[in-house]
Amino acid sequence: MTPITLSTSWRHGRPLLLAGLALALAACASSRGLQPQGALRDVDSLHSERTLADATLGAAGFPARDWWTALGDPQLDALISEGLASHPSLEAADARLRQARSQVGGARADQLPNLSVSGGYTGLRLPESMLGDEAGGHYAGSGQVAFNFSYGVDLWGGKRATWEAAVDSAHAAAIDAQAARLNLSANITQAYAGLAYAWQLHDVAAEELARSQKALQLTGQRRAAGIDSDLQVRQAEARVPAAQQQLQAAQQQIDEGRTALAALVGQGPDRGLQIERPRHLDPLALQLPGVLPSALLGRRPDIVAARWRVEAAGRQIDAAKAKFYPSLNLTALAGVVAPNVGDLLQSSSTFAYIGPALSLPIFDGGRLRAGLDSKDADYDLAVASYNQRLLDALHEVADQVNAVRSLQQQAQSQQQAVDTARAAHGLAEQRYRAGIGGYLDVLTAQSTLLQAQQRLAGLQSQQVLSSIRLSQALGGGFDPTADDSRRAASLSDSSHS
Image (cartoon, rainbow, N blue to C red; front, side, top):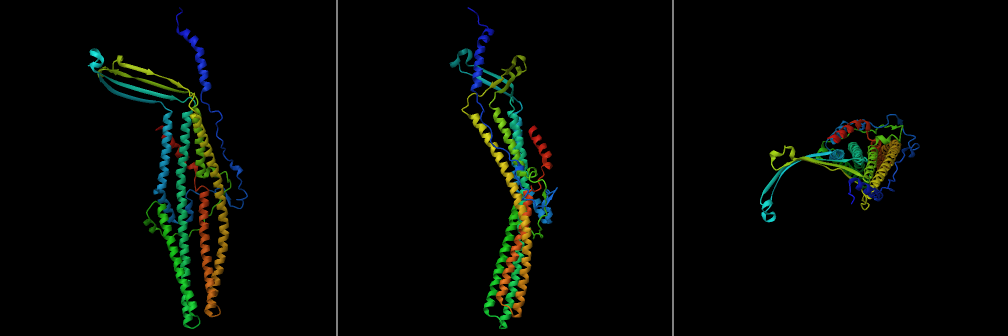
């Protein structure tokens, strides 16, 4: 009988091993046919040259980081500083940033080996009725100290791709935190402009009340002289409470504007009582950068954050693909064990174990393909979000440029209408005093003047708001180069902590 040796076993078993390996590779999970469908929109394909042709262009057309200071109101500057220091929305954005940075650290840790130490004592006594006199009825104990080592080798770069995706997501979260501050600044500025508008309406209502009271006094004198009847007096009397109601409505709008600002700076309603009347706000004088629309890609925080999320989604696809390939895990265990603690340092008490393991997914019911398909869909969603934000950015800039241009012309025309209405009211009042004109002419001229003044106040307020919104549409002073080094340093610290 021929003895079976190791070489004989290998010679006969090698074909079977190779056949089994080939069968495993043929049957293993495959990512064939799965790929994302989304494509980033080329900004040069979104033409805006004709729409923005009449806009003022300049090399430094983007707003400054503290663009609201151009409005020239120190109270507004103080409110924005207060809001940036204490508003809860900023605390939430910072918390989300810390979450993203912690995920960077976790992904970095997955790339590194794990080493731990454990120790303990084990004691055991079994009954004689189970094992007899020789083994039962005796107590035996042992102490042990062991070092555990494990390392999942990143053969295909999947773990690195996961870490890079976490870094990209953290970049996006950092920009989101900056965008939250820019949006809060813009919201406070818009609310402040709304408060200024409420005070304008208050002035218009106060002037209307004074005119109405003056007209009532005049009609009373004319009735006493027998020139006018009670009809004219009643008509004049009706104008006074109407003007008072408009004054009260304007005061309500002022109070609501103050409480809104108090909330925006992160304080209670009583903080609004300390807010004084804003100074006269002129529209911001803005220029558009001559490199639109491509320059928006780097100056709009929402677009920059969306681009980082596209990068992160692409890295997640790479990580999902790596799961289709074989994985190698190294495990080692070494330590000492002895019945007595004093014997743990003897060489006879040492033990060691090493166990490299190679695994290959063969059949998982389609779980890996479903996971990769999901990551492809996440990438498509990120691309769609980026493309939509790009369209929205150009739309917002174009709308506000058109609004600033049109409102300036409308305000100039409306100022002429106010001047004309004021002159007409003065003439009607003079004719009425002289007895050659009727009170109906005065009422008509007064109503026309009131409406013209209210319309002018609204247009002037819209001018200011449009210039604020244009600043926001142009990025609100966001400068990615100013924060890149700080973000890189913080991400490096989190990845090595």
